[in-house]
Length: 235
Image (cartoon, rainbow, N blue to C red; front, side, top):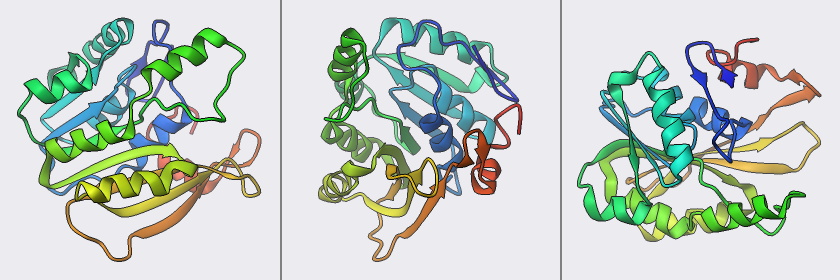
């Protein structure tokens, strides 16, 4: 169980637990001015949808999850939250959702399950599960291009080394980055993640900055603290 200030995440049936990636994305994601509808692709525990329910007045917050256990857990987390009437989870794969749903969304977010060459745990079964559930970036971006409203925002967190490739895939589908934040664990660490926000309008010079999480072990930077203080209990 993971307690936040305004909601609780039960995660005993989810392979992918609450992690810094998801919390950072949920807090960082830019919100469009007229935000009515949100889609969280690959919701897992429901974390992103719940964070955005707390952050916004969006009336329709849909989530998509293919895994049986994660879907059931996300539904329970939604039902037990203060925003149950605004949250809905679809139990389907992305291809099925694309075929059957005709809605438009003002904000689309995803912390996609990814498998890269340098991802290995000591659990072969978990590695295999991670590999099999990895969502091809092409499929994710194509879905975003289909569902995103004209003035909408598409926001993701991905491995830094995939940044250039992901931006190129998006550009081919006429989605253009307007904000890029690169994430480091501490000041001397390698850049591990890229936070990317896209829109349909071409931007010549997107905003680019850096987010460093810790000054030292368990001592957060002021920037990270400011970003997540509305969520973490001890901040």
